[in-house]
Length: 347
Image 1 (tube, rainbow, N blue to C red):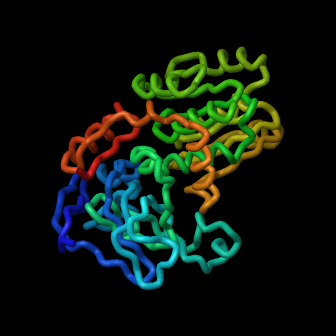
Image 2 (cartoon, rainbow, N blue to C red):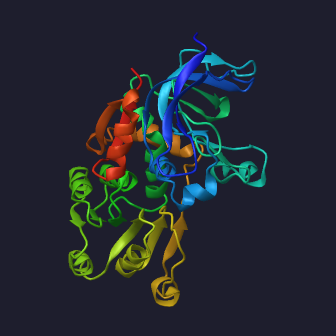
């Protein structure tokens, strides 16, 4: 094996500031594996890091090899690794958990009190090789496509969100048509939602994808969202709202459209505090609010495997393909918003 690899680094605390570097290939510790990356994809988190927004400024310490969505082949294993073999086709759970804190011992490893996130708190995977803790490695079905294998991290966010509510046979409102909202639309359609509504601010490109993957109605800014949805639900409102925007206006609109006794599930991250009428929107409405972060380890991953095996189709959401050397162009298209998921092939 060669000694060095190409990797994408956030080099300094400012917008952009991303470059390829040649660095030593990491060597696995006793509980790690070394993976040769075959494909990777760009996440919204990576865009935050590239843009150097308020979240990144408070969380990231450059220089950082970033990225966390990938699939590849195991090429070396640590001395204590037993369940993973050289040659395995794998991806990885990006939440690195301690396994011993209260949350981990209670089966909530995704909210470990000592949680580190791959490519955020640790060196990531925008590189030819990556060292990953063996406990975080997921063996893919041999016939799973590379493009589906690399998007399991964000797809898992959608699976976790969707399955936190009672979806089959229900009317569902999805707030936000970013990649995770689009994945959630496809999943809701696949598992038998009665009617799927979606809202998007101004992005016609993503609104069109939402229709392709199962949204019965997509509403843009300026549309009569409340009038049309209440009319379509006989004045009752939707059974479930899935929130992916982190936008206070969208959340309050979703609470207005939620039927009495309904459920709102929130994955969107909010940049500031906001207010709502808890008395009318939650208490008297007998509403259930459920916050979501990450993926249930490993329940969500097994659900994804089952969804893939039962024919879940997310092809329309994977919109752009690049070579790894074209990372700057790939990041530009992802930042433009005129894309679903953007994937990069190593060779």
